[in-house]
Length: 447
Ligand code: GDG
Image 1 (cartoon, protein in one colour):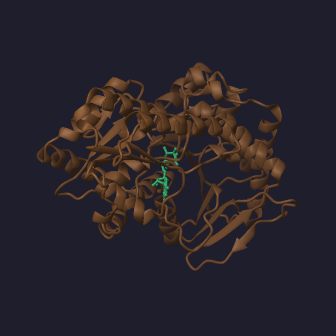
Image 2 (tube, rainbow, N blue to C red):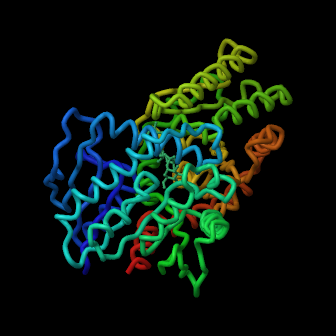
Image 3 (cartoon, helix red, strand yellow):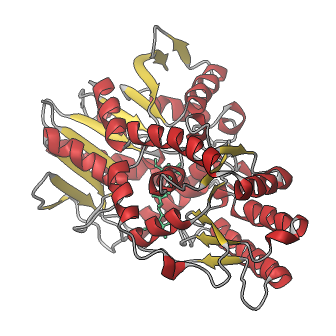
């Protein structure tokens, strides 16, 4: 079987990687033998000129270093201040700087340079996400003919957003050098087709085949999942539920997101405020726990979203809190995974309201964590990739506070029968399409 080489922005180092993606890729890497290549994690003064190999029983890992200048340009700059906002419909937040695009190209070229000496003739290469769009073209330039696939974890931009890139045609030139382009949702595949068509870069061929910039390849939808069985166990064996109950016995509503402007956190706070204004009977009956660990804090837009969120939570609590009830608890720190699983299980409502999101794994984790005999209700934004399959959630438009507040009220009143019926359908989807299914489907298509 061909060896699998995975390349991602970040290499999961450490002994106890808990993310579903890491586990799934580990399984795939173990099955065929493999190598996982990625950034070591912290910029260094003088980056080494070779990959550094880390011993591991199951498969090989190899990291590369980045200088602070390269990290700023490639990661904070072009990846997270141009591509991330663009792909999440926030072209207004882009900070286009030519030296960042240069750095993005330079780092991708360097990764290719470091990787090529370690490639074997029958390898197949799987590149993850938007930080590495140009990697295949840099590998091809260095003579690599192996199958190379790409999976995009975030949304693919439509024509209006693509037009806001400094050089839109270049994106399609990069993508054309892969053999398989994988997307989270049908929405993304149709955005690719539409955006490339407007630039006259695409000819549809049979089935999943396309001709992009003159090169034939395949493009498909592979919705990512979680390690469902493991998460169910985690939630069942989570710390004692009763001790975490609030003083008033209020029902809990939970949100869990990196503190990112794409996740719609201020919108859900405002909807919660409206719910409390319109439903005095719910005071002391519902309390909202928002966990939002910090992320990319050296990017300006992330400092702004932190301020906005803290301000709103403070204002809403000031307006409604009583001596034994705090309407919003806002935790700006990461919480251990097993505690998180237990919190999901206790929460009567799981609130997932991104304005744009590739998939959203929190929606799937919330479903997996529920007690099947008395499950909670998932409220899910129609702009999450997850909404294409998780149609038994209460699907809402996060921009509309009235609709969102009504969904919260409806979830509070929903009968146990209806909750069980909806949950059973959602759980079947999350169990059948777990992360192992995702990597197996993708790799079978890559061939
Ligand atoms: C990108 C795409 C796509 C969050 N806070 C804590 C914590 N988390 C964990 C969650 C979940 C993960 O982080 C977040 O995953 P999401 O899918 O929700 O979002 P992104 O980070 O934006 O991921 C997304 C994903 O890639 C995979 O393709 O679904 O659309 O944007 O697992 O549980 N985990 C712990 N403590 C926290 O405080 N332990």
